[in-house]
Image (tube, rainbow, N blue to C red; front, side, top):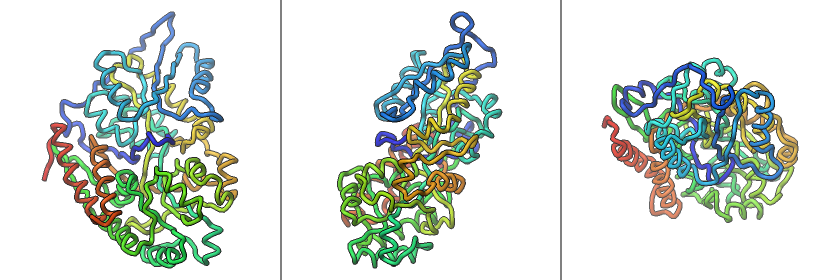
Amino acid sequence: MVSRNKRIVAAFAAVAAMGMGLAGCGSDTAGDTKTTDDGGVVNITYMHRLPDSEGMTLVNDIVAKWNKQHPDIQVKATKFDGKASDMIKKLETDVKSGEAPDLAQVGYAELPEVFTKGLLQDVTQYAEQYKNDFASGPYSLVQVGGKAYGLPQDTGPLVYFYNKAEFEKLGITVPKTADELIETAKKTAAQGKYIMTFTPDEAGNMISGLAGASGGWYKVKGDSWVVNTETDGSKATADFYQQLLDAKAATTNPRWDPSFDASIKDGSLIGTVAAAWEAPLFMTSSGGTGSGEWQVAQLGDWFGNGTKTGANGGSGVAVLKNSKHPKEAMEFLDWFNTQVPDLVSQGLVPAATTEDAETPSEWSTFFGGQDIMKEFKTANNNMGDFTYMPGFSAVAAKMNETAAKATDGSGKVADIFSDAQTTSVDTLKNFGLSVSE
């Protein structure tokens, strides 16, 4: 989902032995008996947080197509306008009262927490027939312990946005290695041009994705969580950004602050790592500045990941515990999540592989005629595995706070990862989960 409220990290990989690690916290599996509501019609409800903005194919219009084609399975969609965290609270309340929808949009990084709270239904028996409609990576993001709780909808692979025209003026190309990028960034910064950013408000989402692309932070061993946020990938990422900050060779404007937009408009920012779903938001941030000059490239070997990239954002749609119609809900869900052109109109990078997503014409215009959806697909297939833990939002918040200190010089980038370690352990213990230290 492409909005500021959707600050959730993608790349929740299947958690081995989760059922044992979260004993007593899981969700029930519904039977295979088809029950009907009124006059033999099965009624399904779906809660989402998609933008539904002007010019998009509205969710209700997409659902109307389904309802017309499937008179015996009727779906009603409702939009939740609050934050993702507020929607989780509502779902928790509604599941307890028996009023929860059949289907709900859930960020990949939120799924462990929602599972732990017992809000989801195991729908593996239905999901298996649809798994080939989606890339294997995104499909794993809606699994816990090898069991499926829904289907993937969109993804957020990290890529590199850069102003190709400005690069050509400076006589540079997209660097391939960390050393090359740092040296190039120093040279261009001396000329008032910045090819990299350090955005403290995105640390929990983006930096975890970059650092984790070379190896996950969380796993379950036996009946306990094992936490290690200070991996080789984390150390490489910390060293990379620390060198940029020390040399003042990267901008430090928060991503969701007007100062970030201003740095694009004044021509000083000419390169940044960003999530694929940021493409339309980046166009808005630029105010049209540099239209036709920007391009998208894959990340170089900058963060100790080789050619792997990480993820930032993305959601699946999960079947809630109380649903009496999981089979029919999954049938609709597979159809909905494979309506690729309609989902693209919502600004999403679809997880479906049933057809290639076409780059919208206005995106193509801004990005110099480049087929950026093709680049996003390449990045999708190149994401490293990363397992997220229940309550990761608390970890991300702490990472953002520490990143701000690294920005003003009162802390170091490495502190982001050490604070993530402490906060992760404390958060898991607060959930009543066992942690191996």
